[in-house]
Image 1 (tube, rainbow, N blue to C red):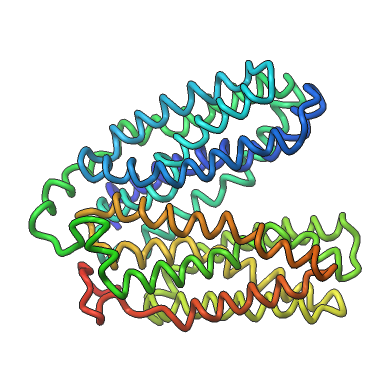
Image 2: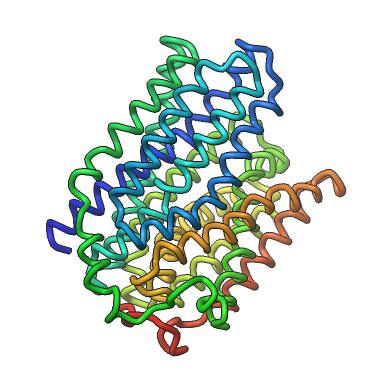
Length: 399
C-alpha cells in the first residue's frame, strides 16, 4: 500500500477511535457517575445508548447515500458538527428526558456518519483492490484501540472534573481525532467520480436485494452477529458461572478483548493464504469451538480455551466482513449499500443479546445461550459463498 493510501486509512482509523470511543466505550464509563450524581435510573440513562444505536443504524442508510453523492468530507464534517453539538448539550441536561433526547440524537448522528459503515466504505474507495486486505486490517487494528484508549481517558476526566465536564472533554477528543481526516482524506471523491459509470456494482438497494448472494450474505451475517454480540454481552457472567470470581472473570474478559488486536492484524495474512470466504468460515469455526469450550468448562483450562479462541476470532470479524462487503457491492454505491447492511445486521446485533438473554432467565444458566450462539455461527459459516464466482457485481477477486 502506498504512503498516500496508508495515511488516509490511518486517519480513518483515528476517526473510528474518536467516534467509537465516545458513543460506545466512554458511555459505559459515564453511566454509574451520572446515576450517582443525578439520581436518574440506570434504565433511563441506558435508554440514551439504545436510542443512539438503533436510530444510528437507521440513519446510516441516509448518510451512505450522501457518501455516494458527495464523498467522505461533507458526510464526516456534517455528522461531526451535529453529533458534537448534541452530545455537548447532553452534559447540561437537568432531567433524564433531556439527557436521553440529546445523547440519543447526538450518538445516532455520530454512529451514522463516523463508524465503520462510513470508514470502511471510504477505505474501499481510496485503496487499490490488491491492497484492500492490508487496508482493512490497518483500519480495524487502529480502530480497535478505541476501547483501551477511551475507557481510561474517560475515567481520568470523570475523576478530575465530574461527568459533565468529562462528556465535553470526550467530545473534544472525538473532534481532535476526526479533523485530520477532514483535511487529508480526499481520494474517495476522486474514486467516486472515476468509477461512477465504468465500475461494476449495484445501482441501488433494491437491485442489491434482488441478488440471492446479497440476501444470503445479509442473512448469514445477521445470524452470526446476533450470536457474536450475545456472547460478547454475556460472556463475563458465563465465565463467572463456571465457578471463578467476578474479579477473575472480568480480568479474563479484558484479556479476551486485547486478543482481538492480533486477531485483526492477522486478517490480511489469512485472507491472502486461504482466500476471503475460507477466512470467514475459519473465523466462525474457531468462534464456534471456543464458545463450546465454555459450555464444557469444568476447569479453568477450558475457560482459557474460550478466551483465546473467541478473542482472536472476534478481532478478525470486522476486517473480513468489510472486505467481503467491498467485493460484493463494488465501489460505485458502497456507501448506500454499507448503510443498508448496517441497518439489517446492526439490528440483529442489537436483538441478539436480548433474545438469547431470555434463555438465561428461562433456564437459570448460560448453556442454552452459548449453544444457540454456536449454532448461529455454524449456520453462518455454511452459508457464505464467494461473491466473485457467483457472478455478482464484484470488482475483482481477492488476491
